[in-house]
Length: 99
Image (cartoon, rainbow, N blue to C red; front, side, top):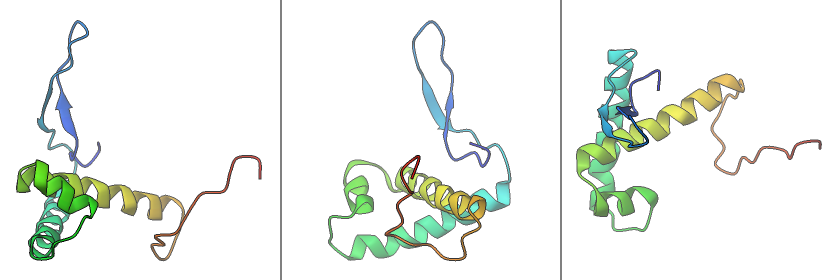
């Protein structure tokens, strides 16, 4: 949420209304993440596959998919920074509590 990559919420009386992205936080960093996501989408469209991104592109607009991918990438970056990891490991699983 601190990057402004989540929907702005305007809710009242139990009725939840989600608007466009909130655009809070660092504009430059958000722009870089979205441009990177658009580059990935450009190549993902050329390759037919059943990845999360291609399924999303089948249901949503390219710009919505770009923001969703930027949000996902921001979460990965945040996790790497908070755990002092040097590299991303796709097979990473946190240890169970109490182990």
